[in-house]
Image 1: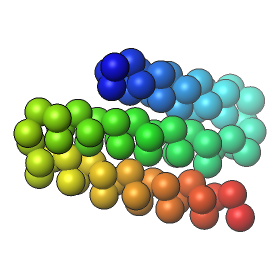
Image 2: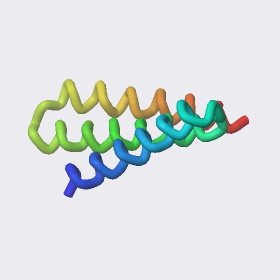
Image 3: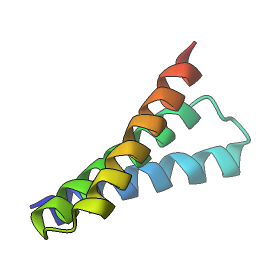
Image 4: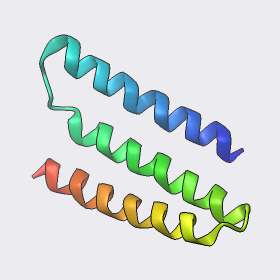
Length: 75
């Protein structure tokens, strides 16, 4: 189930990135960063599930950083 969420979040982020590259309009870039952050969170949860806690903690910290960046991009 987590793999499906990871695939969906990655696909949405890639679609936002491709849209920005094709049109030159980067107003959706914070959304792209947000979905990349969600993907990192899901990957972190998968690492915790596989008992690799150090990678899990690192990925959750990256999620928090990307969440901060995406919220900062809205304002």
